Length: 200
Image 1: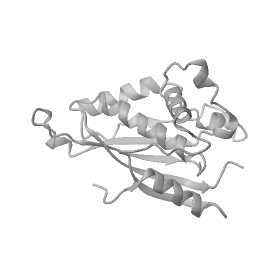
Image 2 (image 1 turned 135 degrees about the horizontal axis):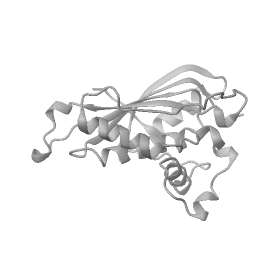
Image 3 (image 1 turned 30 degrees about the vertical axis):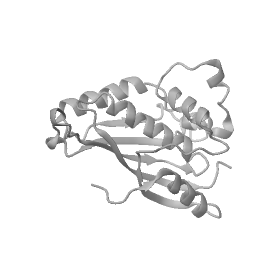
């Protein structure tokens, strides 16, 4: 179990401060995912909801689609392709084998990916899900396990973090909703190979 994970807003403020003057390599933190909403001027709640819905493969309204633009991350943060099937795989894995190490969603580049292409350079690379104390689950008694995750980002702009963390939180909720006994959503071990202030 992870001790003392920090709130997502506190994490974003810290990331913004330390990356303001120079990039930070191999940045890591433990996050409390019980509240993953970090609203900013660039990402008010309706924008966060639209991006997360898109990446969860939901159908969007025309109004929601109007929130999409390059300043908010463009194609580097488009994780939608095959996401419903990837979620179903994780749910089946954890329902069938609660101690599994194979509950993984990979955001892979297409064969022949070009490093010069934003569409081929997805920021989030892989997220692993696991249940803490799965053997002690007893849904009949009200005791549930906790769904936690570890994520690896190729790169993270602190200004885009609110969108990414909202998607991960929405993803954890979507998975937890389909697991036996509906586990609580717990912590996230967050790693990015490079943290920068913004996308420029």
